[in-house]
Amino acid sequence: MINRRALLICSFIFFILAANPWSQAVASSYLGQFCLVMTVDAVVDGQPAEIKEGVLRIGMDNMRDNHITVSGTLEIPNDARPIGGNAELINNIWRMSLLSTWALGNDIYHMNLIPETLEGSFSRMRQIFDPELNVITPSYATGNIIGFSCPVIIPGSICDHLNISPGHLPPPGLCKIWNPELPEGHQGPPGACDAFISHIPLGACLIDHYGVVRGIGG
Image 1 (cartoon, rainbow, N blue to C red):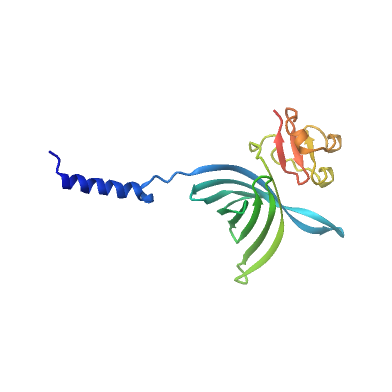
Image 2 (image 1 turned 135 degrees about the vertical axis):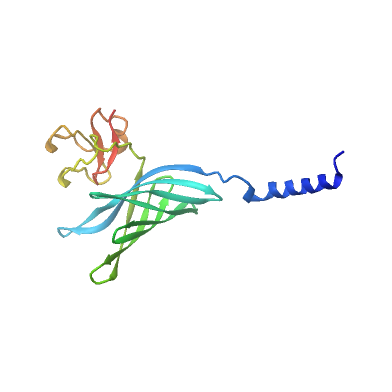
């Protein structure tokens, strides 16, 4: 016959363990992958212009209780650096704090991003270490964010490293179907990105004003 006192103690212990959140398995939910083009305001030949800061390819995980981790890569010309940090959804705005490091410095990004449109703004503090002077020099920049669904680009494939001349890129807000087999002057006209995305010919790439590949034909 089971001892009543032992049964009560076991029941009590089981209740405490079940109610204790630390006893539950920590399950994360993947929120998706996002590609974000970051631009900064600049002056080129005396005219205001937007310069590409870089492209973020990040994945977001909701670990638990709205604790969201962010990790991925920051793609800049001729380089790709790891980047990671945290995000929080406040008043339907993603507030992100991200850190990217390299051999002699790091970038700290603070970003505000609208989930529905993947548009927003960012501020960046860059710290560069000078080994000769043994000092850290900071610099600051602010800019805008434009997001889109990440195309799958295989390294070395047709859409990897297109190296398009700036004068042949489409205007801001538009896209262009780019055929790597044709000369730059023989490419098609620019148009709305949404109209092109599902009609990209096999062997062609859909690019935007910043030279970022938005989609791949096939």
